[in-house]
Image (tube, rainbow, N blue to C red; front, side, top):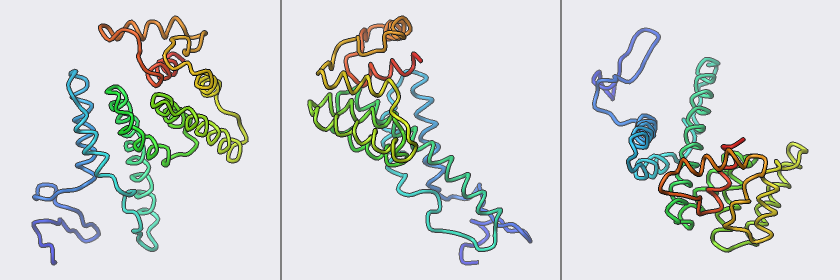
Length: 219
């Protein structure tokens, strides 16, 4: 009643926002910004501002701390909405790391990569992104510590070792090989070379993180 008929549509067993009313919804704004980013990137445009704004909107999980007692249907809907938005958020953070890294803005990429990892501490790609960023910032000790943290959590939670690509990246960082193309797995060399060629005028990848991602896409 306090909101009035302009904002809500009500029926006997249903209440919802009036989609034609003049309201702002953070989840709609978040997903809309990511759609704009995808559209702009497909057209070869500059999408960084969309990602920055979208990720700034995501402060907590969907309806965090809110529940409806004795409503299994609501709980199920809330769960899937939360998971869907978390996946979108993780994707947005990964893309934002890439955008900053391409601009060599490693100091901006670092906290974003850390935030990405907090969503799933078993995410080896996030661990490797942090390792690459530390290496690009000439902080080999931090890169090694990140690898050790990755090894520890995989052992503790899953009792498995890191993927071969993760170990290879670690060994390359140990050797100080931050710029050589042989960082890409030899078995994927031809595919990775094609991916490099596809960059056109950009030429060879010029960062450890970019080479690591070429190796991932080559699998």
